[in-house]
Length: 210
Image (cartoon, rainbow, N blue to C red):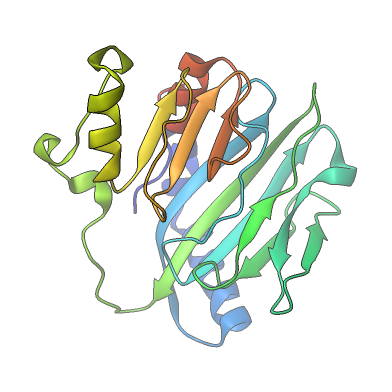
């Protein structure tokens, strides 16, 4: 199970994963197995929020660990009628369970000067066959195009991309349906994943390097 390095102590304790799986099985009514876990820090120095998105696994469990502004600690999920429900965490240890691959959801933005730490577990039905994780892709599967290459080269590369990651630069025009992650001091509000803060530090945190 790939885990952020900051979760090394938790990963060494099999009881944590076992209890998450047991709780998810009760909530979703199926035997579920954890396939990935991450520690996510929200702050204006890294990423203040996570925009509307669907997860890559059927089941998601978000566990609240700490927040400097508890009153705004939580997430929002979209109902069938298009309205949004806000779920707030009252105290550390509380968790939200959702069908992450079916229910559009987002984090509640963190106000300037505040931070929030959560654990996120992604689960699938026990024994379900899964495709290789994208991290297994070879370098040949990934193209990096610098802005210095010229607008034409950037536009051509973006047109055939599966994902666009813009760091400290304007978000290039892209084909419909291509998700964009933008790392910048003031990220584009239209980006699918907006990470506000010093670009180098923010990107390093997202990659688990800081």
